[in-house]
Amino acid sequence: MSLISKLSARLQNHPKRIVFPEGEDPRIIKAARMFSSRKLGVPILIGDRAKIEAQAKELDVLLENIRILEIDKSDDFGDLLKILKGMPKFRNLDIADVERFLRIPNYFATLMLATARADAMVSGATQLSASSLRPVFQLISLQKGFKTASSMTIVETGNPDLGADGVLFLSDCGVIPEPTEDQLAEIAITTAKLANHLTGAASKVAMLSFVSKLQVAKTGSVLKVKAATALAHQRAQAETCEIEVDGELQVDSALVPAAAKARGINSSVAGKANVLIFPDLNSGNISSKILNIVGCRTYGQILTGLVKPVAEVTRSSHTEDIFGAAVVVAAQAVDMKYLYP
View (cartoon, helix red, strand yellow):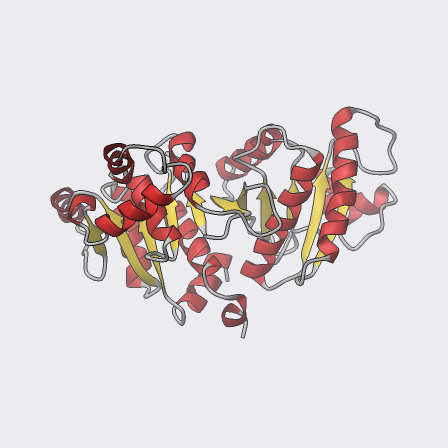
């Protein structure tokens, strides 16, 4: 059974409200129908009601149990305006300028999430990443003790011998171009925590490089990964979930036991990793897109390090990709003790 199927089954017992700021997009409407018909919770589509209803009719999609929200007609507009006006980044703006921000669907949806009017959010289907992520980073707090938000791609490989029963968690694939040692360590821990939350399995984190340890390489990028691995080890010891970290590792040493053995690497992670941490955004983003193109089902970007669940999908996403991302962030909003009683 796929990860999305497993999470869907658990969500049926703990349904969640998920907000889509791009509610008029046909892929979003179909994904919302899938989410609702499987009884996973209530989708909230932000947009013009007439346009959404016309689009749904053309698609032959029922809107039953799907909430449509028009920003200017929302009963929450006044309260959310006061909340937004009181936030540090908006405090010195004129009220008219704050209203203009609130009428932007991404800002309205993010504020719904921040104020518990929704449990999770999926955005990015029609916008550049910068436009989609800006309100998230402005309005959603970082997890306590962390200074870095990043993003994760979930890959269902179809090979049960890889990762966590065929599932790999890749990071960072969408936010930080050149992470520092400290940022790499934080990315490793926040990704590992979320992987553990979603699978219930121990997170085996591989800090990736173009060489594996025991090989001689003194380039700056390798030394950065080595230092980040040490920091991640320290951070992992303070976490309540089971996190094991090893690095620096080439990707085959991380995933293939025979490759790790051939290089003389013997650890609890080498050859058994389920979380892959890339040294920079180039390698992470390129790898995740290649995996998608060659036929692996991928879901993301799933933002990590934040106190609220958010997915930022791409403009090339299909309905199934959007639905999968919605399931992931909705499951993220379920307390782990309920996901795995």
